[in-house]
Image (cartoon, rainbow, N blue to C red; front, side, top):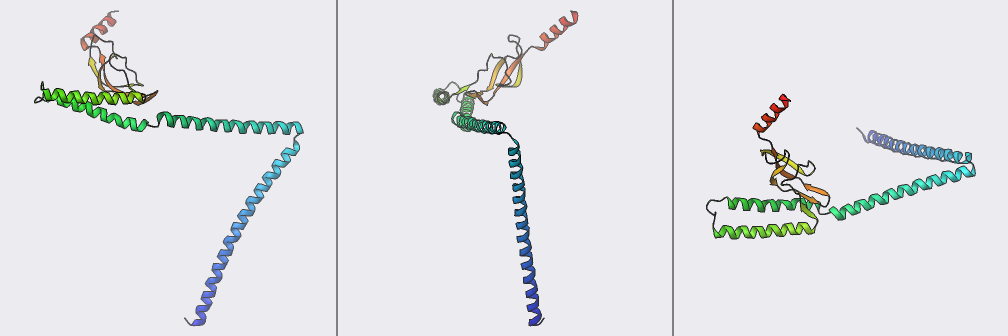
Length: 219
C-alpha cells in the first residue's frame, strides 16, 4: 500500500467516524425534540382542560389538588415518625438477640459443672455456681432495665405466639397442652418477640386416652 492509498483510507475512516458521530448527535437531538414535543402537548392538553373549567370548577380542582398534597405530606410525616420511633424503641433489637447467647452459655456451663461427678458436693462447685448465678442475675437485671423480659412458661398454656413446643411429656396431673418443661427461655423486648421459649408440653398417658376412647364408644 503506497502513501496515497494510505491517506485515502485514513480520510475514509475519518469521514465514517465523523458521520457516525453526527448520526448519534442527530439521534440524540431528535429524541430531545420528541420529548419536548410530548411535554409541550401534555402542557397544552392541561391548559385546554383548565380553560374548559368554570372559575368555580377550577377553584374546586385546586382545592382537591391541595388536599391531596397535604394528605401525602401527612402520610410521609407519619411514616417518618414511625421509623424514628422504631429506631429509638428497638434500635438495640439485634444486639439484645445476640446477647441472649451469653446467658445461654452461662446456663449450659452451670449445668455441665453441676453434672460433673468429680465436682459434685464440693465447695469449689458451690462457689463457682454462686458466681455464675451472680453474673446471670446481673445480666437479667440489665435486660430488665432495657425492657427485655423473660417469657412466662412453666404451668402456662402453650401460646404459639410465645412458645415453641419441642416435645410432649405424659402427665395426667396437668391439662393437655400445659407447659411442664422449659428447654430454653424466651424473651420479649417490650411488645416485640426476641425469641420464643422452647418448651415441653403435657399430654395424657396412653392408658388414660384408651379409657376415654372406650367411654366415648359406649356413649
